[in-house]
Length: 489
Image 1: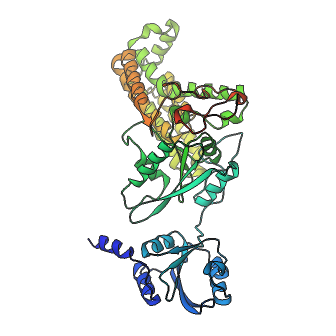
Image 2: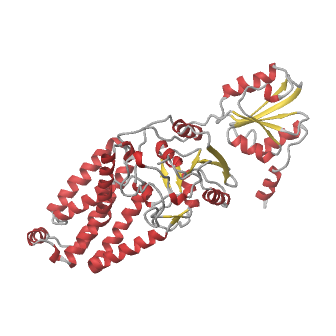
């Protein structure tokens, strides 16, 4: 009840009396207790009236305030405030709620005696990293820069690559207590308005106190929060985001995240890499073929081996079968336990490698992969063939660059192993078909997950393999864009 009364109080209009406005702001921001909340009173020369500035000193540029706001107010004369201060944007504010939001966003609020309008001036200076190389999405050929935690820097990186006056940067606020800005970026003369409206509606429907970053926002926008398969693409590469914008997609940015969200997406969006297009035609498709092979190996090779070795040994050549049997002769555990031990051990090594300090990174690889693996074989706990299978399965997973899809495939691997251990290839095939049918039923903001392969749409057919760039005529047909052609035939 008290929180509701406070919100209604903040929605009050600006008072005509400067002293009343000062008292209201002091109470709202706990002036005196809140050490970085600053207040500066002065007499404006242009109207000979008393004025007062409010701002957070920790998130604004002090030199900007002094040079472009305070000094002009004290020294210059004129008719309008916007002609006196030399700050870029001066906006009028008529209620306390908006004034509070602007101060939290790094703006300076100016109150003037006998004026029921306050003035908001942008002097934000949030600390952030400089533009560096991408840590999680690495490519040999193509741009190397990555997003940072600064929203303005990220938008600049996109506009640097996409010189289009139709590129729109729209802002929506989310959160009740902590109001954070979500920027919706799209190409106005391309985007499907229904998809754009769907995204905006989901943002408007979010009812939560605070969403600090893109990573949290993703989970509020999902249609199926319990789904194993992701429906929103997460990337920290500006060139990747720009490529999707040129094809009519929508991306979301926030001020505290060094990445963006791309929507809607299909299965192929997770499978493809920007480097596929930077490389020549044959090189790029060869890279995709390797990636597709890795996708199969990481998800199915362990389960396939369990199914064949336990239930369909007649499919194995006699010499290989004898070698496998001989290597497992002194192993005390069933095959399924061996596989699970190695798969879980690999996941432990992977998780430890992520959390361990950088100088110790190579050590965990040597100790985990070499010493422990060799010791397990010599102790007759694990057979050598299982080490090979688990190594192929684990290493192949690193070819899947997207983090969400990587987790999905790693979890599916255990589902397939357990299915194969129960009834062999029959159960493995059944589990695969169930997962495949489930994936085919998923839609990302109305777009079928396996488009444009199924259902079929007019597009560049850029699914498993891409065409020569000169022969790419259409944008993705499943987006139903305002302009579906990239160029004339």
